[in-house]
Length: 60
Image (tube, rainbow, N blue to C red; front, top):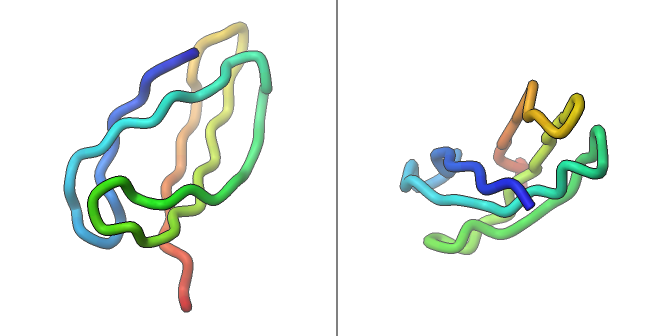
């Protein structure tokens, strides 16, 4: 697993998530551990290295 730190797009708190580098590109929704709002997470790996990461708010 790969630990990645980023800011929540809602509360701007620094949070971390464990990402699976065996999946080259994926998009999924996970709640912020601080404010509990849903975040659309899109990591992209190449040869087990994180090459792109997006954490977007989901308009509700």
